Length: 262
Image (cartoon, rainbow, N blue to C red; front, side, top):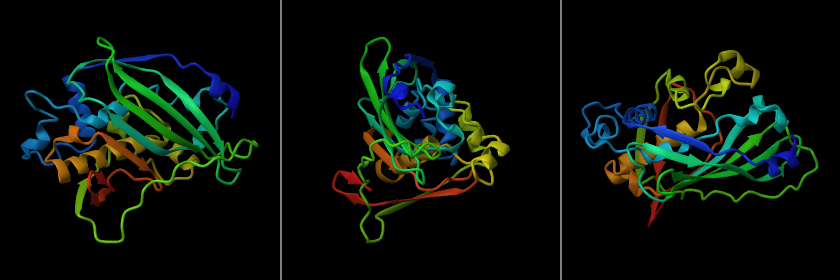
């Protein structure tokens, strides 16, 4: 891992133009429309006007799987998404052009047994007005790159749910081809689509993208708490402990504590 290069690298700006078809495709890839008779779901797929799922910001103007580039020195085959946060500053339009620019904000050495944590952030802005739409931050676990002698600083621990039963539960099925569908947004890592790559990374078969899983979680919260008014969910973060295999059902347990949801 080339730590100095990662911290000093100036990533190019990425521009992304999308239309209602793209917004519909994204909604389908995170489970909207699994009940084709639910009109509240269909407003994200076939609405007039169309609503754009807020979690689509995760794939907009995304730099892609840049950790695979040679200059990073990262053992990309062993990389996993550890944490992801999305802060929505205003609803996403159904079509438009947006811009973002990635920056690496830190690299933490957790030792050779755990790996290194790569912290990054990007802000998504409207290309025409310059308005800030969303702030996206993530922690990538580079399992093959720890032990280089860097600072072993800590990452804030997530909030844990209470011991009582959840206030709501939402179950959403994923499709066997869900990772392939999500690849169409340009977030292509072979471990999510190519069986030999998944085996090389230590998994029996391709698994779902972390940000696709987070999109399903956003969908579940919108369903259970807001009657599919997903724009009311303005700050969402997750820590990923296990992989999800396409075709499995995601069960989201939900605890409410005032304005906070766990």
